[in-house]
Image (cartoon, rainbow over all chains, first blue to last red; front, top):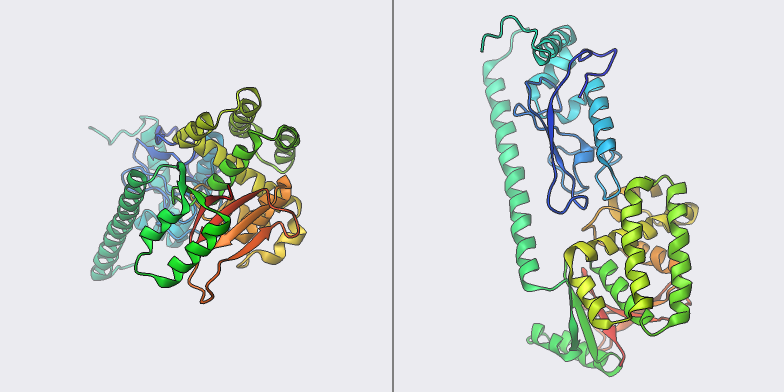
Length: 131
Length: 266
């Protein structure tokens, strides 16, 4: 997935996995980034936490009732669009990554720098990364 | 900006225990669901109504009412209690009726054929809709070409097929609600639009049905349903209600708080 233009994730290429349950499309798939990410709505292990990946009632993060939910006629395309817009506009209220949420809210400059680092790493341009 | 390290630790603990709690609740729900699946077929064989008395042995009100009901509806077909029971019970009972009613089947087919374009015009993505519509039509065509009750039972007991039929009936319900949104808006609880209600309470699987779902589906299809209520009310006879109002019922369903089964008069 490419980081959306005009945002702090611009230029990044982030690999992710989409895992489908056996009763897909009745229940939603899961999505997980396999690279390092730093974002309010992505858990530290890469799992994506947005409303469309949850059926109503299955509500670990207390999404707003108007938020778009999974239904059997939703598509993978719709999920990818939602994830792109999540990268562009994090939802600091339902923070899967509390540190990232706080930084996004209170120290935007620092957050943007962190995001740039993530972008560089995703492109293999991170010189300090010796691993 | 100095952080109080204690606060930070507390937050972290709360976040982790919160996650563990949520996961434990979800796991518990899965276990209960599994138990229900193991002990109930999606759609049972036709059974004598009086078997219900075994479930309410020590309950004089229910026992009396079951006997009262037995005079008009001596048979029952049970459905699995998975939140889809109204749609599954309705779908089965009506299609069973269509096995021997060619004129009604013809009318139904036309409605279903038209419904696809209406759903697309309401914003339902055609690419994913097609799958559900085609599967539904396949089953309807089968009713015409090779009408067989045992085949119909097998279709409704096959989880994959059965759930696809439920999805389409949910979409038809959503269609009617959105098409007549101005009317149904009055019955939507909470501060929600009809569209939001549909995406939260109608289209997703496993969400239970309320009167508004029943009114919408039966009105859209023009199929009268009698719902017989078996509840804790004090009178000795069972109440019933016909949906949509004023339409002669073609099929009957039994409602016990939270669950629908199919009833048979003969």
